[in-house]
Length: 107
Image 1 (cartoon, rainbow, N blue to C red):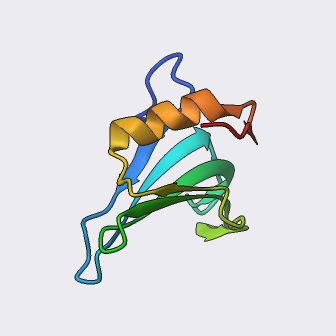
Image 2: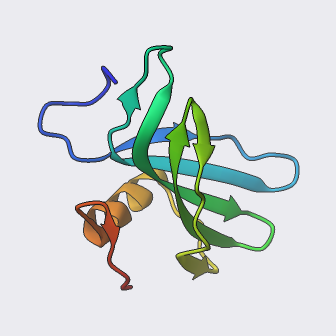
């Protein structure tokens, strides 16, 4: 949690490498999770941008954590056809479309 800058509302949490199957993902922390007594994430809200480089599309999902494991993945909230988003674009999209932890659909 020390990577949060003062006043920061959201941040990039994870950027994966592209796998041999063409899949990659970027995770944005929307709301900070708590750390439980075992130093594991609990709660919070995360946006997962799943990129398929073979199909040239990006899909957006949200999830939280329970005892250090991700859970509660949503159905796909948005599909960006013919587009692979960069980490900066993912963060910008989240800042524009998540207000108080609620997804506001739009372009």
